[in-house]
Image (cartoon, rainbow, N blue to C red; front, side):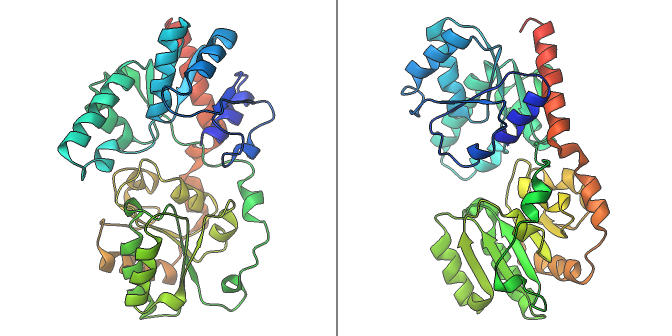
Length: 352
């Protein structure tokens, strides 16, 4: 999302430097040519300080936009040590309270304390959904004037080209059973265990297949569960793919089974491509994106039977692709970049 946003801001006549530990990080090859890529070769709050201080003193940016809390803490320390003033803009991407809800009391206390300190020092906090905005405001105790809602810059001009790229996979050949697709890291948050159980129910009623693109520490658990459910031959976990859109555009159904999100990009991308979707009503994002279930079905979190019923219904009645595309018009790179530019102008006028 930061790569997309950087390019969009260049289109808004904003000079953008993109600081990263490594030029080989994913998606950096898609940076707009007008964005200057600066490699720090270091990571960590303290390790990055010499490069960050040097950068601040040389370039003297008006704003530092951070998508991760650790990067923001590094920037704040560098601001203090360099003496260079800039306005920090935070861009949280998930509902933090849900992410840490099942951790120990000490971990939650420490996470909230770090958030209050970091976000309290920000000139503005931009959430990608109303749920994220409300969550951070509650945790950090920030006034409404410093909280802003700007959607993720998901729908990019190159999305259609990526989706049209060739796909050599036997499951997508003409005449093959429909493919249900899911995307994301193989971790508890994404609810792929629930999806497997729901898929097993659907598979008992009709021919279909399930493809989950992503990698993570739960791969073994998910493969064992698929075997226990008797659907291992109908499920594939190919790992991470840099162009999932060619799968997404050809899938019969995209399913978001998450237990929590911020604003789920894969769901937004599926809608932008017109793909039928089903999503859990998790905090936060799906309810906003799907207009309370008007665009596509919403089901309760952690309920395989409800998810299976919604999947079967969507496979029978895919619905209107044009309605799905229209639902994410607010998520274009151009729209999001223009709103960030307006926020920067507002902060400049206020002398922040």
